[in-house]
Length: 324
Length: 312
Image (tube, rainbow over all chains, first blue to last red; front, side):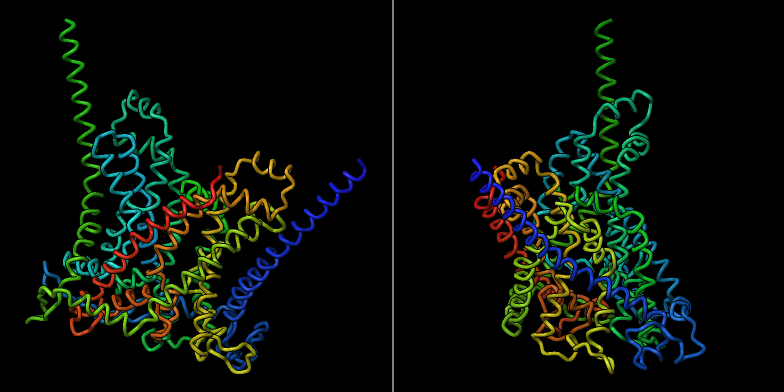
């Protein structure tokens, strides 16, 4: 009996030792990741408060001293970026098969205007990317017409087929419609229902009780009122999460604006131009430390949003995973 | 009387049906029009473009004509001239598949088990998804590439050899990739029935055995979905080359090549027919890859579900 107990104790001891080693190894990799990530961010923040002279003079890793440029104050890089930074957009004229030659002259875009474009692109674009799949999913789920089943099947096929690079055809269409290189053209692109979130909303509405809809109908609500006053408000948690994810994605997206609306640079696009180093086209001589101030100004709004809403953002993304 | 009542009910029913049908059509009309134009038309046109070439006419107009398989010949020429496009794309996939996914699974398991600082790690792993990749690219480029005087850090990006630069980029892709993967996997793990975990503990499983024999089989459908998603991105992943602004052909992936070529010609007045990577060639390029990728994706999914571990 005592021997059996000893054997069992040894087994438990071994098990806990294996567990400790296993978890310690994972923790070690995670700690390395954390150190690299925080050091990168901290280093950028630290240098954003230094003058270009100070950085060029060799103060790369210590606190800002201010001794290299007495006129420089800690927030000068941020002020310069917000007030002086511009990017130059060349002539973007193109030929449309419906409207002939469309001339779009060259222009300079300031940081403030980039912020406005970003808010419109990410805000309205995120809203459309959320509300369109939500409403279409509701319609297909609760209006039991044959066409609903067909459309659901089409959405599924579209989701499965991995289409690679239809950029030329998309640009050609947008040019022909005369909406290429316009902010509203890019928003029309976002007015689509197919994609992962359509299925997330569809799964949600499948579990949505018809009693609410019947009650609304008895109370005299018409179909539009049922959607706007009953269905969407009840799904607000899911809608706000999908909106947040879309908003952050669009805030960070520079490739689509660069391709489809080059004359309307968003902040991410402007920062990309900053990164590609075409300083002659930037309207101001950008020092390395100004670059740091620029990237921090761009990242700050979404990081703050993330800090305040991280539970919501992350919890529901997991939901997407479960639904998969 | 009863007949009249029945008639009235039937009329009401029909009127309700009609109202619902009209509302249904009105609400779906715009999304369907958008779908017809921006998905169906664009993709059909993409196929047509693959068989067309452009000629520039007077007044900046361009005229399309049938090109036969000329664009496809160009594509095969590009593959022959730049074999690294496929090599780099596949290398990126291998790294993501054999290093990225296993690491993400281990991180997720650690977080799922609520080990030390699990909550903090979860947030930090997600942070690169929140902050734009461009932001990290600028910082990394300065830190590792601009080789400022007096810095002890090696130049791993700008003047390093191709192999070193490729390795740095692959490491960067991995570094940026964990957020969503970890969230998806952790989400799936929290759905594992606690009774299964308790039973495995009673049977004397250590954490590694529990991970391999309980956790992985239980979340296998999510892993399959994720692998399918990764396969779908083999030929669209740009390895952040465009963001870094690297134009070295030896580093290029297929995703980078297609985007950068489309971007190069987007600003011009007409799609360039002189360039081998004109719109027609690019569309042929995309069409060929989609044709290859579609059966591969379905095949891998079928194989994984047939031969992979099952929760049962």
